[in-house]
Length: 100
Image 1 (tube, rainbow, N blue to C red):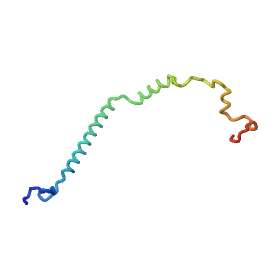
Image 2: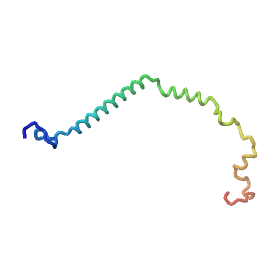
Image 3: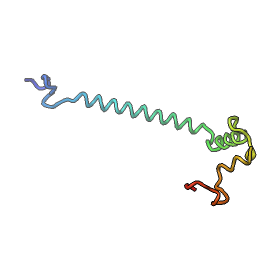
Image 4: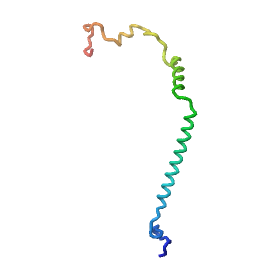
């Protein structure tokens, strides 16, 4: 065979050429370049934004100043006798249960 000709096993001039490895490396390089470009754009956006802590503090103050519309506004128990069911008995002798 002549030097420089290729045969069916993928050899050129006595060496193996791995074209898949070359394409794999190029694809990985392209992916890394895209990721670097994306990160640079994100950094530029972050530099243009105002401080998040100031925005969060302002938002928190606005939320805390308004009552929750889904929760009822009560300043104390509506019925004081209702709380007796959630307290221990004052006299242990009156309690007939064995758990307490």
